[in-house]
Length: 253
Image 1 (cartoon, helix red, strand yellow):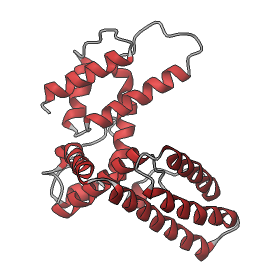
Image 2 (spheres, rainbow, N blue to C red; image 1 turned 60 degrees about the horizontal axis):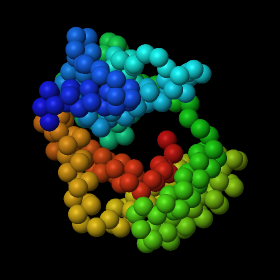
Image 3 (cartoon, rainbow, N blue to C red; image 1 turned 135 degrees about the vertical axis):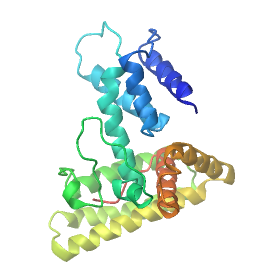
């Protein structure tokens, strides 16, 4: 996708989200979208960031909106989703530096974050372990009900759900080494579930996910060392499998 095609795709999406109201990406808006493209924000990730802004916009407004949303308003959400995507697939400042590539600095001028470096990370205030397990079980139940991968996944989901249900009963009071062992086990179950969902796909579906991962990572292909690219590629494919099968992330950070 050329830079011009990227901008036009963003323009079409924003128009659609504005109920067909014509939005032209020119001036400051063009500069913002062009920066997304230069920084390697995959189109799919940019669209998710725009959608996130619109969802919050509708949720926070009691009365129907009167003015169309401009793309400039979506910049922070797009950068947030891009940051989440980079962390999920392992494209860090460290992995870029290994290849001798200069990572792009955040737009606000702050230092780029590397999840492999504890001193650079943001403070995490996620859900507790019992709450995490409860949410995972609800999402697994929903994934089983939809059957988007196929009936062969039912036994895997049932077995994983049974083990997680037992873990949830014990998680509230677990401490120390027992808690660390449980977290390690959750990561193993997460890997097992994604591998099973991937294996359940036919060859054509797997090949399409591989191609989609290549497209998402196109801007980073030359900026990552081969091993780092392979890890990122696998992480993107895993994420796409999760999206297709509606699978939750079982691993607990």
